[in-house]
Length: 93
Ligand SMILES: [Zn+2]
Image (tube, rainbow, N blue to C red; front, side, top):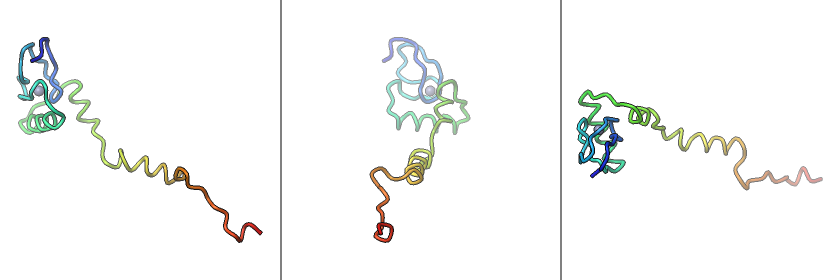
């Protein structure tokens, strides 16, 4: 139980010290990432509006392409680490 005022990670609502769950979205004060995502989704479905950091975090979600595609594309274009072009026999003569 938080001993001071705390801000809900799921919705951004400010809660009183001693509150076990958020007054706006009912997300537990010590929620896991999965619980936070579920509470945020339920809160938005019910017409709730995210505040502060919760709104910024929801917009910062990256797609799989952002996480995996872009670095992989950069590696392919820049040359795979450790991979070197080997001269073929026709260029040696
Ligand atoms: Zn909340």
